[in-house]
Image (cartoon, rainbow, N blue to C red; front, side):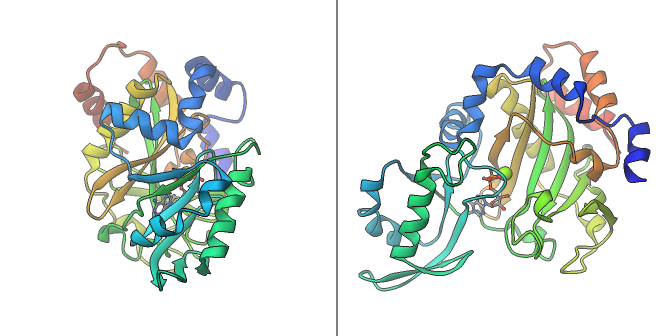
Length: 313
Ligand SMILES: Nc1ncnc2c1ncn2[C@@H]1O[C@H](COP(=O)(O)OP(=O)(O)O)[C@@H](O)[C@H]1O
Ligand SMILES: [Mg+2]
C-alpha cells in the first residue's frame, strides 16, 4: 500500500535510476574519500567541515599493548572501524572506571576490562567489521554528547540526520532516532525510527518504524512531529559543503548535533539508500529533476535558499 502510493509520487527505485544518479555523478576513484572514515576526517579538516575529533588511530596489533595509558586518560570515547558500515563494530565508552593498573570501561556493550576492549580493537584490525573484509584501522573518536532537544526522542544512542545532497543541493533529509530494537543505533534496517524533515524549517513531517507509519517514538511515547531540529540552516550549509569537498554529485551526508559543539559531520555515503523517501512519504525524482534544470555555478547561499523555498513540505 505504502509503496504503491509512493510510486505515484516519483519514488526513486532500485532500478536504472539509481545507476543514473550514483554512477553518473560519483566517479569511481572518489569513493575512497568516503569509504574510509580516516580519509574523510582529513578531508574535513582541509575544508572546515566540523567533525568529532579523532584522538588517535590504531593501525597494527603491536600498538594495542601500548594504548592502555592513552585510553585511561580519556574520560569517554568511541571506538570504530575506519571502513565500517551499518553501525557494525561501534563501541561507545561512557566512562573509564577502576584503577590505572586495572581499568574498567563502561561501554555500550556493558562493562569491559582492558583485555576485552583490546580484543574488540583487534577484531576491528583483522577486518571483522570492514566493508570489504580486509584488514582495517581503528578510530578512537570523541564521544558525541546527545543534544537535549532530542531527550525522549531516542532510546539510548545518538540520532543522526541524513541528507541527500545532489550537486550540492540538500534535496531531502531524515532524522534517524535509535530505539530499543535498534540497540541504540541510528540505522533504519536495525529498527531505528526514520523521520522525514521539512527542508525549509527543520520540522518533522512524517515518520516510519519498521516500514510502518507512526506518530510517537515506540519506546518513549514522545510525539515525533513536535520536534524542530535546531541549527537547521547550519546543518544544510555543512551538508551542501560535502559536495565541494568530495566532488561527488550524489551523496548521503550524515550529520549529528553535539550538545557542546553543534552540527558535526559523522560520515558520507556514496551509495545512499532509498528509504529516506519512505520517511518523507515522497519521491526523490521530481526534486532531482528540478535541480537538473538549475545553473551549475550557484553559490552556497542561493543553493540553500532554493532548497528551502522549493522543498517546503
Ligand atoms: N563518536 C560517537 N559518539 C557516540 N555515538 C556514535 C559515535 N559515532 C557513531 N555513533 C553512533 O553509531 C552510529 C553509526 O556511526 P557511523 O559513524 O555512522 O558508522 P556506520 O558507518 O557504521 O554507520 C551513529 O549513528 C551513532 O548513533
Ligand atoms: Mg552511519
